Length: 124
Image (cartoon, rainbow, N blue to C red; front, side):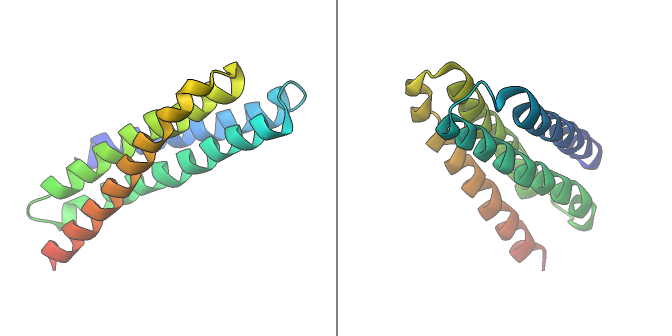
């Protein structure tokens, strides 16, 4: 599990930094202020949860049964796809119906953090 989540977390950090730079330099003149805020929210949550995935990778080897950690990592990864992905597409395309997908990603983020906490509690 260490290797896969190190890879997923690292790739997502690269994507978050790249997408953040693209937004700041390539989209700022093309998007409204509100759409830019939405895009930046996607980048912010993308980065935070990529770091969360890296934390999971680092602590995974300390647990005898890392099943909850694995679920936590996968839910955070799916959260990035649903939450940040929907915000990226919404801000660039203006397709407002994508806003209905965003809360699913937020819920996945919360589940991931709860699973991480449960794993820590059970691991003690």
